[in-house]
Image (cartoon, rainbow over all chains, first blue to last red):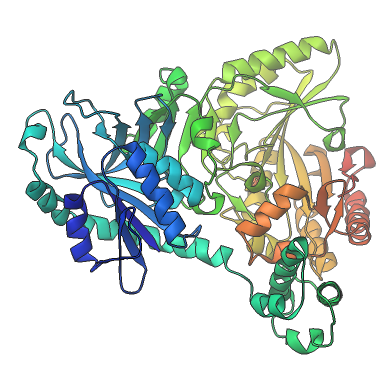
Length: 272
Length: 332
Ligand code: SF4
């Protein structure tokens, strides 16, 4: 799943339209939109760190998120000298309040340049050689507790700079700026999807796991052993049908012993 | 090769930092206060990061040179290791660094002068005695040599202090900087090997066996002392045949007189590292190998371990004198 977070409705609107998202009515604390196939969701959070933190937690509680999900904070930001309308991926987030920093991991060929960002508590027109916004630090801090760091990013589009300050920014302009960068956002998602798929593949339950869990009782630590043994089975005995072998077992413990014994008795080759 | 470089503010103007940054004019540079902010941050995924590791330039403050376990000694009473780098260009599936670190980024501690000062202090503590210093515990010592220029800075200390011996552990063929200079008698370039088929299965991105062997031959020809490290020994049903072939290949080519030492040890990892690796690479056969848990380590069951160690020991001792052979007979 892809989770998008925008502070303002005008930042969200072009994304809602592009990804054909619809409002999920059952959640009323924040507005959450979702695609038909439930693969993409978007939350409008409101301005500021508190709103963003609450929205990320809320989304996590409402929709079932997992380690392989992609989390993106998309919005506009100011910068001293980057031209208006350009997109930047964020490579360092510093919270102005306590000077703590986070470093989003860009391990792919980014569709746009990257730069650092400062999250402020209050709006400012004192432009610096850094992006500034009012949400990213809260977004990142929360999201890395719920997901995998390499899949969590902030993409900002420059809405104001020393030449054209915030007074010139309005909702309509913001919508247009975001809409103009949809391709960049799509490309970013395209870079992250294979990484996400890799995390999904390594965190997926091994074959037959669910069936075993339903058929026999396993304690928590036995379930871990089961998962490990089923994986080993698929690597060591890929052509042997597991079900007839365990069918007669009466308990989870004996199932584990049967699996272990068969794996230990198999001839182990590290290569073909 | 390196797209992103994190730079600790403290060493931003260190001459080595400036020289390295010059090599990568296109890289994105990101400043940080301490390398741990990037390197130790939770929820990073080593496997994903390995696809495109960044370089982190940092200063090592404490624990620059540490005592190393007796089991790994190669003939001296006093043994120390140091890591001017963390992580490695290669991607061996059995590598313990994947379990030890949160991040796959390369950390380079640029304050070599502090490592050398620490080594001098240690040497002074062991009056008149031989002291061995091992490099390549938390990295491959030579793999990033063109960037790190490690040998250029460390060799003069060993040239001056013949009581100290430097072991450079590597699988790399980056030996140009060594061949350019006259050999240092108290330096051992130690190459690790597993049989060809095992190396192909597990030692991703590392130079193949033939290239490593050629590097050894070039170094020996130039007069350098060589070490052979068969650690970890990897079990597979045909291990006897595969290791015999490997030993035959190596011992038929190298000069035993310029072979300083040979060591071997079975595959084993601390339990929590093993479990982490298993999660990172659930489809990796290595982690489905026969295994036993002992003293918080996971390795091969004693029977397999002893059988393999004895088998290899038998062949090795036919080729080199006992005083050059250092088996690591620790438990798993
Ligand atoms: S060469 Fe050594 S340090 Fe590098 S990945 Fe392989 S085992 Fe690890």
